[in-house]
Image 1 (tube, rainbow, N blue to C red):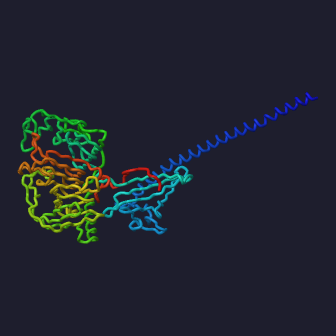
Image 2: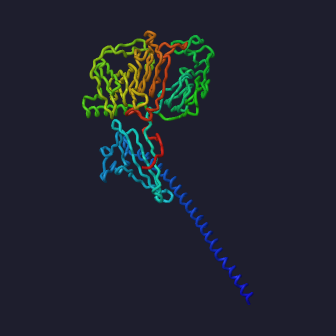
Image 3: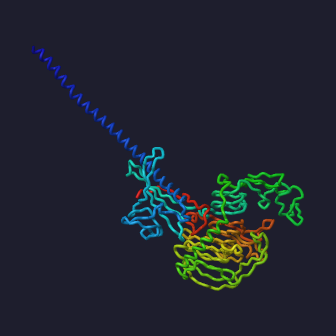
Length: 566
Protein backbone atom coordinates (compact mmCIF):
# COMPACT_ATOMS: atom_id res chain seq x y z
CA UNK A 1 0.00 0.00 0.00
CA UNK A 2 2.85 2.39 0.77
CA UNK A 3 4.36 1.67 -2.58
CA UNK A 4 1.06 2.38 -4.31
CA UNK A 5 0.48 5.71 -2.55
CA UNK A 6 4.00 6.76 -3.30
CA UNK A 7 3.51 6.16 -7.03
CA UNK A 8 0.24 8.05 -7.08
CA UNK A 9 1.78 11.04 -5.29
CA UNK A 10 4.60 11.22 -7.81
CA UNK A 11 2.10 11.31 -10.71
CA UNK A 12 0.14 14.14 -9.08
CA UNK A 13 3.34 16.15 -8.65
CA UNK A 14 4.16 15.72 -12.35
CA UNK A 15 0.67 16.96 -13.31
CA UNK A 16 1.10 20.01 -11.07
CA UNK A 17 4.25 21.09 -12.94
CA UNK A 18 2.40 21.30 -16.33
CA UNK A 19 -0.04 23.99 -15.14
CA UNK A 20 2.64 26.63 -14.37
CA UNK A 21 4.36 25.85 -17.65
CA UNK A 22 1.11 26.36 -19.56
CA UNK A 23 0.50 29.61 -17.73
CA UNK A 24 4.03 30.87 -18.40
CA UNK A 25 4.04 29.97 -22.07
CA UNK A 26 0.47 31.21 -22.50
CA UNK A 27 1.30 34.55 -20.94
CA UNK A 28 4.40 34.83 -23.10
CA UNK A 29 2.37 34.05 -26.19
CA UNK A 30 -0.28 36.62 -25.24
CA UNK A 31 2.40 39.23 -24.66
CA UNK A 32 3.95 38.48 -28.00
CA UNK A 33 0.55 38.50 -29.70
CA UNK A 34 -0.31 41.81 -28.05
CA UNK A 35 2.99 43.27 -29.17
CA UNK A 36 2.45 42.07 -32.73
CA UNK A 37 -1.10 43.43 -32.77
CA UNK A 38 0.10 46.72 -31.26
CA UNK A 39 2.83 46.98 -33.86
CA UNK A 40 0.34 46.25 -36.66
CA UNK A 41 -2.08 48.85 -35.30
CA UNK A 42 0.76 51.35 -34.93
CA UNK A 43 1.87 50.74 -38.51
CA UNK A 44 -1.72 51.13 -39.69
CA UNK A 45 -2.10 54.43 -37.84
CA UNK A 46 1.28 55.57 -39.11
CA UNK A 47 0.34 54.62 -42.65
CA UNK A 48 -3.00 56.42 -42.39
CA UNK A 49 -1.30 59.51 -40.99
CA UNK A 50 1.33 59.29 -43.70
CA UNK A 51 -1.42 59.13 -46.31
CA UNK A 52 -3.12 62.09 -44.64
CA UNK A 53 0.21 63.96 -44.68
CA UNK A 54 0.53 63.37 -48.43
CA UNK A 55 -3.13 64.22 -49.02
CA UNK A 56 -2.69 67.46 -47.07
CA UNK A 57 -0.12 68.62 -49.63
CA UNK A 58 -2.47 67.77 -52.49
CA UNK A 59 -5.25 69.70 -50.75
CA UNK A 60 -2.95 72.68 -50.29
CA UNK A 61 -2.04 72.57 -53.99
CA UNK A 62 -5.74 72.25 -54.84
CA UNK A 63 -6.34 75.46 -52.92
CA UNK A 64 -3.63 77.30 -54.83
CA UNK A 65 -4.96 75.97 -58.15
CA UNK A 66 -8.49 76.92 -57.19
CA UNK A 67 -7.41 80.49 -56.48
CA UNK A 68 -5.58 80.78 -59.79
CA UNK A 69 -8.71 79.58 -61.61
CA UNK A 70 -10.87 81.92 -59.57
CA UNK A 71 -8.75 84.99 -60.20
CA UNK A 72 -8.44 84.31 -63.93
CA UNK A 73 -12.20 83.85 -64.33
CA UNK A 74 -13.45 86.71 -62.18
CA UNK A 75 -14.12 89.89 -64.21
CA UNK A 76 -11.97 92.24 -62.20
CA UNK A 77 -10.06 93.89 -65.06
CA UNK A 78 -6.39 94.12 -64.23
CA UNK A 79 -7.06 94.29 -60.48
CA UNK A 80 -6.87 90.86 -58.91
CA UNK A 81 -9.78 89.77 -56.72
CA UNK A 82 -7.63 89.27 -53.67
CA UNK A 83 -10.72 89.04 -51.47
CA UNK A 84 -11.44 85.54 -52.82
CA UNK A 85 -14.95 86.52 -53.89
CA UNK A 86 -15.87 87.81 -50.42
CA UNK A 87 -17.05 91.30 -49.50
CA UNK A 88 -14.39 91.50 -46.78
CA UNK A 89 -10.62 91.19 -46.72
CA UNK A 90 -9.75 90.59 -43.06
CA UNK A 91 -11.43 90.44 -39.66
CA UNK A 92 -10.17 91.90 -36.41
CA UNK A 93 -12.14 91.08 -33.27
CA UNK A 94 -14.95 89.72 -35.43
CA UNK A 95 -15.29 92.99 -37.37
CA UNK A 96 -14.90 92.81 -41.18
CA UNK A 97 -12.66 95.22 -43.13
CA UNK A 98 -12.12 95.75 -46.86
CA UNK A 99 -8.85 95.53 -48.77
CA UNK A 100 -8.41 99.30 -48.62
CA UNK A 101 -8.63 99.43 -44.81
CA UNK A 102 -5.51 99.97 -42.72
CA UNK A 103 -6.39 96.87 -40.62
CA UNK A 104 -5.62 94.69 -43.65
CA UNK A 105 -2.25 96.26 -44.47
CA UNK A 106 1.13 94.75 -43.65
CA UNK A 107 3.81 97.22 -44.66
CA UNK A 108 3.62 97.62 -48.43
CA UNK A 109 1.28 94.63 -48.78
CA UNK A 110 -2.46 94.09 -48.53
CA UNK A 111 -3.25 90.82 -46.72
CA UNK A 112 -6.66 89.21 -47.13
CA UNK A 113 -8.05 86.05 -45.57
CA UNK A 114 -6.97 86.57 -41.96
CA UNK A 115 -9.11 86.62 -38.82
CA UNK A 116 -7.14 88.12 -35.96
CA UNK A 117 -3.98 87.23 -37.85
CA UNK A 118 -4.85 83.60 -38.65
CA UNK A 119 -5.82 82.32 -42.15
CA UNK A 120 -9.58 81.94 -42.40
CA UNK A 121 -10.70 81.77 -46.04
CA UNK A 122 -11.91 78.15 -45.63
CA UNK A 123 -13.00 75.96 -48.57
CA UNK A 124 -14.23 72.36 -48.46
CA UNK A 125 -12.72 69.84 -50.85
CA UNK A 126 -15.34 67.44 -52.26
CA UNK A 127 -14.29 64.16 -53.82
CA UNK A 128 -15.90 64.15 -57.29
CA UNK A 129 -16.28 60.33 -57.22
CA UNK A 130 -17.99 59.96 -53.84
CA UNK A 131 -19.36 63.51 -53.50
CA UNK A 132 -18.07 63.44 -49.93
CA UNK A 133 -16.01 66.14 -48.21
CA UNK A 134 -12.57 64.66 -47.72
CA UNK A 135 -10.73 67.73 -46.50
CA UNK A 136 -10.38 71.50 -46.47
CA UNK A 137 -7.94 74.17 -47.61
CA UNK A 138 -7.51 77.58 -46.04
CA UNK A 139 -6.23 80.56 -48.04
CA UNK A 140 -4.36 83.69 -47.12
CA UNK A 141 -3.72 86.13 -49.96
CA UNK A 142 -1.01 88.75 -49.97
CA UNK A 143 -0.61 91.32 -52.74
CA UNK A 144 1.33 94.51 -53.40
CA UNK A 145 -0.43 97.30 -55.24
CA UNK A 146 1.61 99.68 -57.41
CA UNK A 147 -0.02 102.65 -59.11
CA UNK A 148 -3.44 101.35 -58.11
CA UNK A 149 -3.02 97.92 -59.67
CA UNK A 150 -2.12 94.53 -58.25
CA UNK A 151 0.81 93.18 -60.23
CA UNK A 152 0.62 89.71 -58.70
CA UNK A 153 -0.42 87.82 -55.61
CA UNK A 154 1.16 85.50 -53.05
CA UNK A 155 -1.21 82.68 -52.08
CA UNK A 156 -0.67 80.81 -48.81
CA UNK A 157 -2.73 77.62 -49.04
CA UNK A 158 -2.96 75.21 -46.07
CA UNK A 159 -4.54 71.80 -46.60
CA UNK A 160 -5.68 69.04 -44.23
CA UNK A 161 -7.97 66.01 -44.34
CA UNK A 162 -11.26 65.60 -42.47
CA UNK A 163 -9.99 62.58 -40.48
CA UNK A 164 -6.69 64.17 -39.46
CA UNK A 165 -7.26 67.94 -39.30
CA UNK A 166 -4.19 68.35 -37.11
CA UNK A 167 -1.90 67.23 -39.95
CA UNK A 168 -1.43 70.35 -42.06
CA UNK A 169 0.81 71.35 -44.93
CA UNK A 170 1.17 74.81 -46.50
CA UNK A 171 2.36 75.92 -49.91
CA UNK A 172 3.29 79.46 -50.94
CA UNK A 173 2.64 80.19 -54.61
CA UNK A 174 3.25 83.46 -56.43
CA UNK A 175 0.95 84.21 -59.35
CA UNK A 176 1.53 87.09 -61.75
CA UNK A 177 0.84 88.01 -65.34
CA UNK A 178 3.78 87.52 -67.68
CA UNK A 179 5.39 90.96 -68.10
CA UNK A 180 7.34 91.86 -71.21
CA UNK A 181 10.37 92.08 -68.91
CA UNK A 182 10.41 88.27 -68.86
CA UNK A 183 11.75 88.47 -72.41
CA UNK A 184 15.09 89.77 -73.59
CA UNK A 185 13.58 90.87 -76.92
CA UNK A 186 10.15 91.01 -78.57
CA UNK A 187 10.14 92.10 -82.22
CA UNK A 188 7.23 92.43 -84.65
CA UNK A 189 9.34 91.83 -87.78
CA UNK A 190 11.51 88.99 -89.01
CA UNK A 191 14.93 88.94 -87.36
CA UNK A 192 18.42 87.66 -88.13
CA UNK A 193 20.71 86.92 -85.20
CA UNK A 194 24.21 86.49 -86.61
CA UNK A 195 26.85 84.12 -85.25
CA UNK A 196 28.54 86.75 -83.08
CA UNK A 197 25.28 88.02 -81.56
CA UNK A 198 24.74 85.98 -78.41
CA UNK A 199 21.10 85.98 -77.37
CA UNK A 200 20.31 86.27 -73.67
CA UNK A 201 16.85 85.76 -72.18
CA UNK A 202 13.70 84.74 -74.01
CA UNK A 203 13.53 85.98 -77.62
CA UNK A 204 10.27 86.32 -79.56
CA UNK A 205 9.18 87.61 -82.94
CA UNK A 206 5.79 87.80 -84.62
CA UNK A 207 7.51 86.72 -87.83
CA UNK A 208 10.39 84.40 -88.73
CA UNK A 209 13.86 84.15 -87.20
CA UNK A 210 17.16 83.25 -88.75
CA UNK A 211 19.04 82.17 -85.63
CA UNK A 212 22.74 81.61 -86.25
CA UNK A 213 23.61 82.77 -82.72
CA UNK A 214 23.79 80.88 -79.44
CA UNK A 215 20.69 81.32 -77.25
CA UNK A 216 20.51 80.58 -73.51
CA UNK A 217 16.70 80.59 -73.24
CA UNK A 218 13.52 80.06 -75.26
CA UNK A 219 13.40 81.39 -78.82
CA UNK A 220 9.83 81.62 -80.16
CA UNK A 221 8.25 82.61 -83.46
CA UNK A 222 4.57 83.16 -84.13
CA UNK A 223 4.77 81.63 -87.60
CA UNK A 224 5.31 78.06 -88.66
CA UNK A 225 6.95 79.00 -91.99
CA UNK A 226 8.36 82.14 -93.61
CA UNK A 227 10.38 83.28 -96.62
CA UNK A 228 13.97 84.20 -95.77
CA UNK A 229 14.96 87.00 -98.15
CA UNK A 230 18.41 88.18 -99.33
CA UNK A 231 18.36 90.87 -96.61
CA UNK A 232 18.81 87.94 -94.21
CA UNK A 233 21.57 86.54 -96.44
CA UNK A 234 19.34 83.72 -97.72
CA UNK A 235 20.03 82.87 -101.36
CA UNK A 236 20.24 79.83 -103.59
CA UNK A 237 20.63 80.87 -107.23
CA UNK A 238 21.11 83.86 -109.47
CA UNK A 239 17.67 85.22 -108.65
CA UNK A 240 17.96 85.76 -104.96
CA UNK A 241 21.52 85.62 -103.72
CA UNK A 242 23.66 87.86 -101.57
CA UNK A 243 25.21 89.54 -104.56
CA UNK A 244 22.07 91.64 -104.60
CA UNK A 245 24.17 93.89 -102.39
CA UNK A 246 27.45 93.96 -104.34
CA UNK A 247 28.26 94.79 -107.95
CA UNK A 248 31.71 93.27 -107.45
CA UNK A 249 30.24 89.76 -107.46
CA UNK A 250 29.08 90.03 -111.03
CA UNK A 251 25.67 91.64 -110.59
CA UNK A 252 23.86 94.44 -112.31
CA UNK A 253 20.78 96.55 -111.86
CA UNK A 254 18.59 98.87 -113.88
CA UNK A 255 16.95 101.34 -111.53
CA UNK A 256 16.14 98.63 -109.02
CA UNK A 257 17.70 95.80 -107.02
CA UNK A 258 20.88 94.03 -108.03
CA UNK A 259 20.54 90.93 -110.20
CA UNK A 260 23.17 88.31 -110.83
CA UNK A 261 24.56 87.43 -114.24
CA UNK A 262 24.98 83.77 -113.52
CA UNK A 263 25.21 81.68 -110.39
CA UNK A 264 26.22 83.66 -107.31
CA UNK A 265 29.49 82.67 -105.66
CA UNK A 266 28.28 82.89 -102.04
CA UNK A 267 25.14 80.76 -101.88
CA UNK A 268 23.52 80.52 -98.46
CA UNK A 269 20.51 78.38 -97.58
CA UNK A 270 20.30 78.11 -93.76
CA UNK A 271 19.50 74.94 -91.87
CA UNK A 272 15.74 74.43 -91.77
CA UNK A 273 15.22 76.03 -95.21
CA UNK A 274 14.56 74.68 -98.70
CA UNK A 275 15.40 76.69 -101.80
CA UNK A 276 12.51 76.87 -104.26
CA UNK A 277 13.65 76.93 -107.87
CA UNK A 278 10.12 77.97 -108.81
CA UNK A 279 9.81 81.05 -106.62
CA UNK A 280 13.59 81.55 -106.21
CA UNK A 281 13.10 81.95 -102.46
CA UNK A 282 14.32 80.25 -99.30
CA UNK A 283 11.24 78.69 -97.70
CA UNK A 284 12.09 78.19 -94.03
CA UNK A 285 10.77 76.89 -90.75
CA UNK A 286 9.53 79.51 -88.31
CA UNK A 287 13.03 79.43 -86.80
CA UNK A 288 15.96 78.38 -88.96
CA UNK A 289 19.74 78.69 -88.93
CA UNK A 290 22.90 77.19 -87.49
CA UNK A 291 22.43 78.45 -83.92
CA UNK A 292 21.01 76.70 -80.92
CA UNK A 293 20.41 74.80 -78.79
CA UNK A 294 17.52 73.97 -81.06
CA UNK A 295 15.51 72.21 -78.35
CA UNK A 296 14.82 75.71 -76.99
CA UNK A 297 13.23 76.79 -80.28
CA UNK A 298 9.44 76.85 -80.39
CA UNK A 299 7.15 77.66 -83.33
CA UNK A 300 4.40 78.50 -83.97
CA UNK A 301 3.95 80.46 -80.74
CA UNK A 302 1.86 83.37 -79.50
CA UNK A 303 1.21 86.76 -81.12
CA UNK A 304 2.34 89.86 -79.25
CA UNK A 305 -0.16 92.63 -79.98
CA UNK A 306 1.74 95.90 -80.46
CA UNK A 307 -1.49 97.74 -81.31
CA UNK A 308 -2.90 96.84 -77.89
CA UNK A 309 -0.19 98.91 -76.24
CA UNK A 310 -2.37 101.93 -77.01
CA UNK A 311 -4.77 100.77 -74.29
CA UNK A 312 -1.86 100.61 -71.83
CA UNK A 313 -0.78 104.14 -72.81
CA UNK A 314 -4.31 105.49 -72.35
CA UNK A 315 -4.47 103.90 -68.92
CA UNK A 316 -1.08 105.35 -67.97
CA UNK A 317 -2.14 108.84 -69.07
CA UNK A 318 -5.34 108.68 -67.03
CA UNK A 319 -3.55 107.33 -63.97
CA UNK A 320 -0.81 109.97 -64.19
CA UNK A 321 -3.42 112.73 -64.36
CA UNK A 322 -5.37 111.32 -61.41
CA UNK A 323 -2.26 110.73 -59.33
CA UNK A 324 -0.97 114.25 -59.95
CA UNK A 325 -4.34 115.76 -59.02
CA UNK A 326 -4.42 113.82 -55.75
CA UNK A 327 -0.89 114.80 -54.74
CA UNK A 328 -0.82 118.40 -55.95
CA UNK A 329 1.49 120.22 -58.32
CA UNK A 330 4.65 119.59 -56.27
CA UNK A 331 4.77 116.08 -57.71
CA UNK A 332 4.52 116.30 -61.49
CA UNK A 333 3.51 113.04 -63.19
CA UNK A 334 1.74 114.28 -66.31
CA UNK A 335 3.28 116.64 -68.87
CA UNK A 336 0.88 118.01 -71.49
CA UNK A 337 2.12 119.07 -74.96
CA UNK A 338 5.02 121.51 -74.52
CA UNK A 339 4.10 123.88 -77.33
CA UNK A 340 7.74 123.61 -78.40
CA UNK A 341 9.94 120.60 -79.30
CA UNK A 342 9.32 118.49 -76.22
CA UNK A 343 10.78 117.90 -72.76
CA UNK A 344 14.13 117.00 -71.27
CA UNK A 345 14.06 114.96 -68.04
CA UNK A 346 17.14 114.37 -65.91
CA UNK A 347 16.77 111.65 -63.26
CA UNK A 348 18.68 111.97 -59.98
CA UNK A 349 19.89 109.28 -57.59
CA UNK A 350 17.70 110.66 -54.75
CA UNK A 351 14.49 109.79 -56.65
CA UNK A 352 13.93 113.32 -57.90
CA UNK A 353 14.13 114.69 -61.41
CA UNK A 354 14.46 117.94 -63.32
CA UNK A 355 12.02 119.00 -66.05
CA UNK A 356 13.15 121.22 -68.91
CA UNK A 357 11.21 122.41 -71.94
CA UNK A 358 13.15 121.93 -75.18
CA UNK A 359 12.66 125.17 -77.09
CA UNK A 360 14.65 124.41 -80.24
CA UNK A 361 16.53 121.50 -81.76
CA UNK A 362 19.14 121.07 -84.45
CA UNK A 363 19.05 118.51 -87.22
CA UNK A 364 21.73 116.08 -88.36
CA UNK A 365 21.55 115.56 -92.15
CA UNK A 366 22.29 112.26 -93.88
CA UNK A 367 21.01 110.07 -91.05
CA UNK A 368 19.66 106.68 -92.09
CA UNK A 369 16.40 105.78 -90.36
CA UNK A 370 15.25 102.14 -90.08
CA UNK A 371 11.61 103.22 -89.92
CA UNK A 372 11.68 105.42 -93.02
CA UNK A 373 14.14 103.11 -94.80
CA UNK A 374 15.74 106.28 -96.10
CA UNK A 375 18.22 109.06 -95.34
CA UNK A 376 16.63 111.84 -93.30
CA UNK A 377 17.56 114.88 -91.23
CA UNK A 378 17.46 113.70 -87.62
CA UNK A 379 16.05 116.48 -85.41
CA UNK A 380 17.64 115.40 -82.14
CA UNK A 381 20.23 117.96 -80.92
CA UNK A 382 18.98 120.19 -78.09
CA UNK A 383 19.88 123.80 -79.00
CA UNK A 384 18.03 125.70 -76.27
CA UNK A 385 15.90 124.72 -73.29
CA UNK A 386 14.22 126.24 -70.24
CA UNK A 387 14.18 124.69 -66.76
CA UNK A 388 10.57 124.34 -65.61
CA UNK A 389 11.09 122.52 -62.30
CA UNK A 390 14.06 121.08 -60.43
CA UNK A 391 14.29 118.22 -57.95
CA UNK A 392 10.68 117.11 -58.44
CA UNK A 393 10.02 114.10 -56.15
CA UNK A 394 8.60 110.88 -57.52
CA UNK A 395 5.84 109.29 -55.39
CA UNK A 396 7.13 106.22 -53.59
CA UNK A 397 3.98 104.22 -54.38
CA UNK A 398 3.72 105.10 -58.08
CA UNK A 399 6.84 106.00 -60.05
CA UNK A 400 5.02 107.05 -63.25
CA UNK A 401 5.67 109.98 -65.61
CA UNK A 402 3.54 110.47 -68.71
CA UNK A 403 4.72 112.91 -71.39
CA UNK A 404 2.53 114.02 -74.32
CA UNK A 405 5.49 115.10 -76.45
CA UNK A 406 8.97 114.15 -77.58
CA UNK A 407 11.26 113.34 -74.67
CA UNK A 408 15.01 113.55 -74.08
CA UNK A 409 16.05 111.42 -71.09
CA UNK A 410 19.18 110.74 -69.02
CA UNK A 411 20.33 110.20 -65.45
CA UNK A 412 20.38 107.72 -62.56
CA UNK A 413 17.35 105.69 -61.51
CA UNK A 414 16.35 105.28 -57.88
CA UNK A 415 13.44 102.92 -57.19
CA UNK A 416 10.95 101.79 -59.82
CA UNK A 417 10.10 104.25 -62.59
CA UNK A 418 8.05 104.00 -65.78
CA UNK A 419 8.18 106.90 -68.26
CA UNK A 420 5.94 106.99 -71.33
CA UNK A 421 5.94 109.45 -74.24
CA UNK A 422 2.75 109.25 -76.30
CA UNK A 423 -0.31 111.07 -77.59
CA UNK A 424 -2.62 108.04 -77.73
CA UNK A 425 -5.71 109.99 -78.82
CA UNK A 426 -3.99 111.61 -81.84
CA UNK A 427 -2.80 109.28 -84.60
CA UNK A 428 -0.90 112.12 -86.29
CA UNK A 429 1.46 112.56 -83.33
CA UNK A 430 3.81 109.74 -82.36
CA UNK A 431 6.48 111.04 -79.96
CA UNK A 432 10.03 109.71 -79.81
CA UNK A 433 12.21 109.15 -76.76
CA UNK A 434 15.86 110.21 -77.19
CA UNK A 435 18.44 108.72 -74.83
CA UNK A 436 20.70 111.72 -74.34
CA UNK A 437 23.17 110.30 -71.81
CA UNK A 438 23.77 107.17 -69.75
CA UNK A 439 20.78 105.57 -68.02
CA UNK A 440 21.95 103.65 -64.96
CA UNK A 441 20.75 102.43 -61.56
CA UNK A 442 21.95 103.50 -58.13
CA UNK A 443 22.49 99.82 -57.33
CA UNK A 444 22.57 96.76 -59.54
CA UNK A 445 21.40 94.36 -56.80
CA UNK A 446 18.55 96.41 -55.37
CA UNK A 447 15.01 97.31 -56.42
CA UNK A 448 15.94 99.93 -59.03
CA UNK A 449 14.27 99.51 -62.43
CA UNK A 450 13.28 101.67 -65.39
CA UNK A 451 10.85 101.34 -68.29
CA UNK A 452 10.79 103.73 -71.27
CA UNK A 453 7.70 103.39 -73.48
CA UNK A 454 7.54 105.45 -76.68
CA UNK A 455 4.64 105.58 -79.08
CA UNK A 456 7.23 105.80 -81.85
CA UNK A 457 11.01 105.26 -81.48
CA UNK A 458 13.46 104.91 -78.60
CA UNK A 459 16.71 106.28 -80.02
CA UNK A 460 20.25 106.72 -78.75
CA UNK A 461 21.34 110.16 -79.97
CA UNK A 462 24.47 110.76 -82.04
CA UNK A 463 26.04 112.90 -79.32
CA UNK A 464 24.88 110.71 -76.42
CA UNK A 465 27.38 111.26 -73.65
CA UNK A 466 28.97 108.42 -71.76
CA UNK A 467 32.20 107.27 -70.16
CA UNK A 468 34.60 107.91 -73.01
CA UNK A 469 33.09 106.20 -76.05
CA UNK A 470 30.96 103.76 -74.02
CA UNK A 471 27.20 104.12 -73.52
CA UNK A 472 25.13 102.37 -70.82
CA UNK A 473 21.34 102.00 -70.97
CA UNK A 474 19.58 99.82 -68.38
CA UNK A 475 15.86 99.14 -68.38
CA UNK A 476 12.90 98.02 -70.46
CA UNK A 477 12.71 99.88 -73.77
CA UNK A 478 9.46 99.77 -75.76
CA UNK A 479 8.90 101.28 -79.23
CA UNK A 480 5.25 100.70 -80.14
CA UNK A 481 5.31 101.89 -83.77
CA UNK A 482 9.02 102.27 -84.38
CA UNK A 483 12.28 100.75 -83.22
CA UNK A 484 14.82 100.76 -80.42
CA UNK A 485 18.27 101.63 -81.73
CA UNK A 486 20.40 104.37 -83.27
CA UNK A 487 20.25 106.11 -86.63
CA UNK A 488 23.09 105.66 -89.08
CA UNK A 489 25.02 108.92 -89.36
CA UNK A 490 27.06 109.54 -92.49
CA UNK A 491 28.34 113.11 -92.37
CA UNK A 492 29.49 113.38 -88.73
CA UNK A 493 33.12 113.10 -87.59
CA UNK A 494 34.25 109.49 -87.20
CA UNK A 495 34.62 109.68 -83.39
CA UNK A 496 30.99 110.82 -83.13
CA UNK A 497 29.28 108.48 -85.59
CA UNK A 498 31.36 105.44 -84.56
CA UNK A 499 31.48 104.70 -80.83
CA UNK A 500 33.27 101.96 -78.94
CA UNK A 501 30.73 100.02 -76.88
CA UNK A 502 27.03 99.96 -76.06
CA UNK A 503 25.83 98.14 -72.94
CA UNK A 504 22.09 97.47 -72.80
CA UNK A 505 20.83 95.54 -69.81
CA UNK A 506 17.16 94.61 -69.75
CA UNK A 507 14.47 94.16 -72.42
CA UNK A 508 13.88 95.51 -75.93
CA UNK A 509 10.35 95.54 -77.39
CA UNK A 510 10.31 96.95 -80.90
CA UNK A 511 7.82 96.85 -83.76
CA UNK A 512 10.62 97.36 -86.30
CA UNK A 513 13.92 95.54 -85.94
CA UNK A 514 16.31 98.31 -85.01
CA UNK A 515 20.04 98.69 -85.60
CA UNK A 516 22.83 100.10 -83.51
CA UNK A 517 25.60 99.38 -86.05
CA UNK A 518 25.70 100.15 -89.79
CA UNK A 519 28.34 98.60 -92.02
CA UNK A 520 29.75 98.92 -95.54
CA UNK A 521 29.59 95.96 -97.91
CA UNK A 522 33.21 95.15 -97.02
CA UNK A 523 32.23 94.69 -93.36
CA UNK A 524 33.67 97.93 -91.94
CA UNK A 525 31.51 100.14 -89.70
CA UNK A 526 30.48 103.56 -90.97
CA UNK A 527 28.19 104.38 -88.00
CA UNK A 528 27.22 102.91 -84.67
CA UNK A 529 28.96 100.82 -82.04
CA UNK A 530 31.93 98.55 -82.58
CA UNK A 531 30.73 96.32 -79.72
CA UNK A 532 27.21 95.74 -78.39
CA UNK A 533 26.82 93.90 -75.08
CA UNK A 534 23.09 93.20 -74.86
CA UNK A 535 22.13 91.37 -71.65
CA UNK A 536 18.88 90.22 -70.08
CA UNK A 537 17.97 91.41 -66.56
CA UNK A 538 16.07 88.59 -64.85
CA UNK A 539 15.30 90.82 -61.83
CA UNK A 540 12.90 92.83 -63.96
CA UNK A 541 10.91 89.68 -64.72
CA UNK A 542 10.41 88.95 -61.01
CA UNK A 543 9.85 92.55 -59.90
CA UNK A 544 9.10 94.75 -62.93
CA UNK A 545 8.64 98.52 -63.13
CA UNK A 546 5.06 99.75 -62.57
CA UNK A 547 2.37 99.35 -65.23
CA UNK A 548 4.59 97.36 -67.57
CA UNK A 549 2.62 95.79 -70.47
CA UNK A 550 2.04 92.05 -70.35
CA UNK A 551 2.66 89.28 -72.84
CA UNK A 552 -0.51 87.70 -71.46
CA UNK A 553 -2.87 89.14 -68.81
CA UNK A 554 -3.65 85.68 -67.39
CA UNK A 555 -1.87 84.97 -64.13
CA UNK A 556 0.81 82.30 -64.32
CA UNK A 557 2.79 80.45 -61.65
CA UNK A 558 5.98 82.37 -60.95
CA UNK A 559 7.24 80.43 -57.92
CA UNK A 560 6.17 77.51 -55.66
CA UNK A 561 7.48 76.36 -52.30
CA UNK A 562 6.32 74.47 -49.23
CA UNK A 563 6.56 76.38 -45.96
CA UNK A 564 5.74 75.47 -42.33
CA UNK A 565 2.04 75.93 -41.47
CA UNK A 566 1.17 78.97 -39.37
